[in-house]
Length: 224
Figure 1 (cartoon, helix red, strand yellow):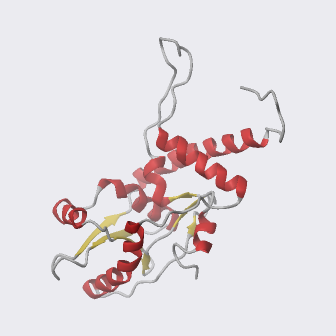
Figure 2: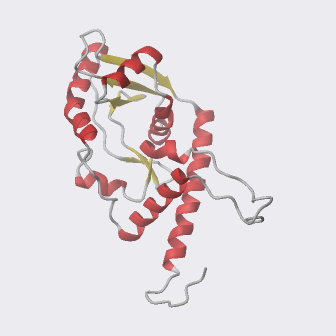
Figure 3: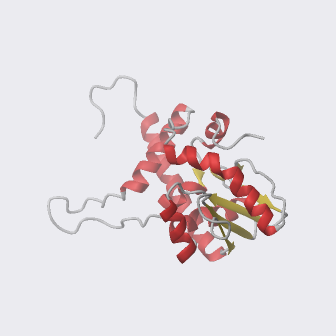
């Protein structure tokens, strides 16, 4: 099994639309053209979240290498705490989880997900171990943060499973508060919108790759 966040794991994900970035993919697109002003008739630019992710994926496909990762303190914290979160989840639910590898969508092989764990034949889960105690507290008070919905439904879509447990864990809280679990059912209507957005992103990536491939090594007069 390829360990998550290892070099092999990053390599497997390179150039793929992943569930962890589907929040960016679902960013609302600009439509149409400017109606007036100096840019009249020109298409409206897409949000930076979409543009930057499309260029990242295109670069990864052209180089065959993942984007260089900066190991931030928050990421290191999550990796350190996650085993305790898994143990706490198993103790609370009474289930034994199965660790999962990076999984490709059965139809769209340019889309994938990395579940933190799988449960039986129908379930899976996503663990968040925020370094900030305030972030965990907010989850305790208001439930699943909306910015994680795309990742969870993306995981359900890619794996074909029926439910996902969202887990938030912070070891500094007392025994009754350090673990939060919320079960999220599969939402096929939402997944249909997610698929549409991912296919549009794939079109963007292929267009960038094709444009780059059309360039020669030396062209003093590149097309505008």
